[in-house]
Image (cartoon, rainbow over all chains, first blue to last red; front, side, top):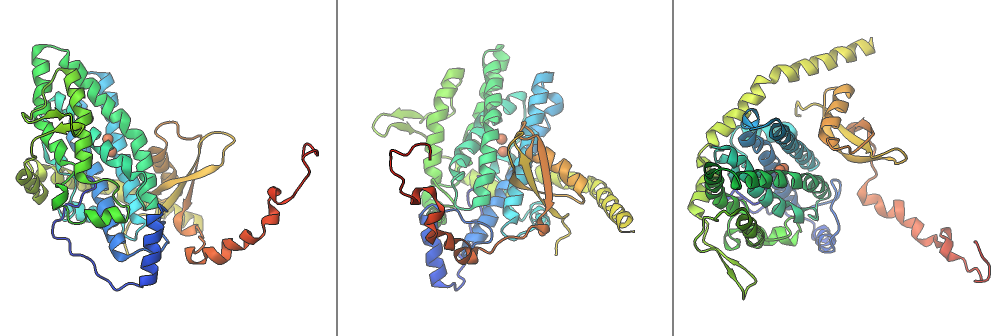
Length: 327
Length: 94
Ligand SMILES: [Fe+2]
Ligand SMILES: [Fe+2]
């Protein structure tokens, strides 16, 4: 998702590196020390982080779109103010993360270009459409819920700037999930039509939310190394299991049904058994075949292009002021 | 070379009496916009009462490779710590 390896054909990076430096690095990471921007690090560590952090940043930025288009249609002033604040937070998350990635030697411009050209990946979840107001509830509850599940362990990720960005993000995410669940409570206790709307949203967002944790562990080639380097702290399947175990009772409380006939408590393992995610759909969305993938990138590009004049005006103003001061 | 706006490091004073603390960075064309971006990005929830922004290129940092020679000499000067000194128990308030 935000943090899983989405490019399947990533070449292993094999640059000859000083074995003594590498060994010292591995020892530091194994001792749970943080790596900071100017410290020596293996090229593969740097590249993996740039890819993961920028992908995470792109997800926050694109993530504003499915919710942003409901701001004008929120059912009350209270909901509108809340949604506006949440979407603004997601912009902030994107900015914290872009800055963290920049400490590794990439530039903002490069990352934005990669996103707009379609070269960079972002979470598959945002290529599904938001059809009704209940989707805004389901997104806060499930999508932000899955994001929290992913991000909490990343507060201890080995790269200092990334870990610190995650601490800020996690502090803000909890409100996102709670406001979503509150929307679901209101709908689930509303009219029959509202309850149907809530159930329909759960039906459509459940499986894409489980996909946010990324491919199953046995098909996630870089997990082992990322765990060793403490870039990742828990595997995709571990996180997915936790998410199901926590979320099922929340659905029960709403009186809604999780759309998985195989979902049931397993006493022996102390967790739920659940059905298989449709991985063909997942990989199709990763390849850019999500229902609204084109729309999302078009919206991003248009926002960027239509606001060029603002950036140009700000730069011109700064240059003029500087020239006046120099005179 | 990228055409990004310059990078500014952002420091926030959480409340009166505390020092400014580094929280992250923003891109901005000038100081004024750097402050505004810093405010929008890092203080949406009463995180602070004062902001500093400093151009990242104006910060001079020590080299991690030299952390040894720079900081280790302090390790063999344990007499700089109060616990180094043996004072009899009956002596109070010292
Ligand atoms: Fe976020
Ligand atoms: Fe969020």
